[in-house]
Image (cartoon, rainbow, N blue to C red; front, top):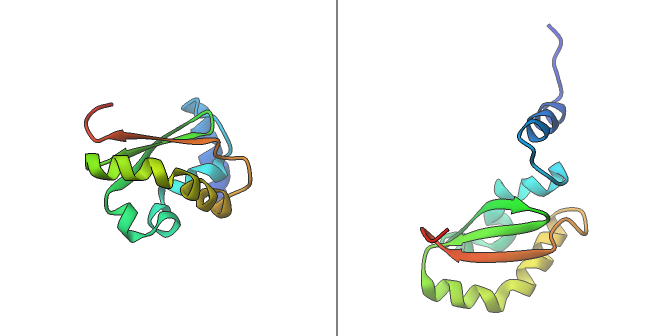
Length: 98
């Protein structure tokens, strides 16, 4: 039995599920805490990537307000963790409201 590289399997799954974008961008889901830091990660989690926009669920309305001011820095961190141009924007929403 021949082994299939994981990247090829993931590309097939992403294609079958009609997910758009570069597979590199999806690494953000497993590395979120490393990218944004433990404090931010304790109150947030990425939930969806659509047309290079990362949707982030936030568990508290105070954090939601604060993250809007941190958005630029977070985008820079995301750009540093992946190929440039993979993330155009971040959209934050309160947990349970979307």
